[in-house]
Amino acid sequence: MASEDGEKPEVAAVEQLPVTPRLNDWIIPTLRLLAFFATLAATLVMALNRQKKTFVATIGTTPIQVTLTAKFQHTPAFVFFVIANGNASLHNLLILIVNFMGHKFDYKGFRPFAIAVLDMVNN
Image 1 (spheres, rainbow, N blue to C red):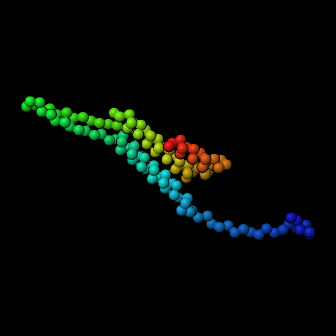
Image 2: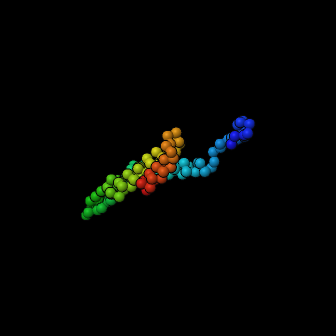
Image 3: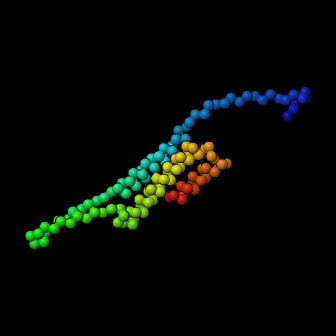
């Protein structure tokens, strides 16, 4: 509103408070980092694991020794497990990058929505 004299009213200066990081701002990235390392460890353990079992049988007086090797590629469920954990590791890494650098490219609050949708797709 204008005053009767035609002067503009003075606006009181609002004191700016320093922005301090809150504990809540670090909970989600910490959990994502923990999930990233857990899924990466599970992927590497399953992909690099090789089990050997040696069977010894005696036929007559001749001992026969057979060594069998098991890898994750021999079972379709384990192949799926390695691929799914690799996908989850990549997803967590990308979301961590978006979390730390995505605020520069945020378009009208689209980032939280996109993260929630990608989390649901990944699960």
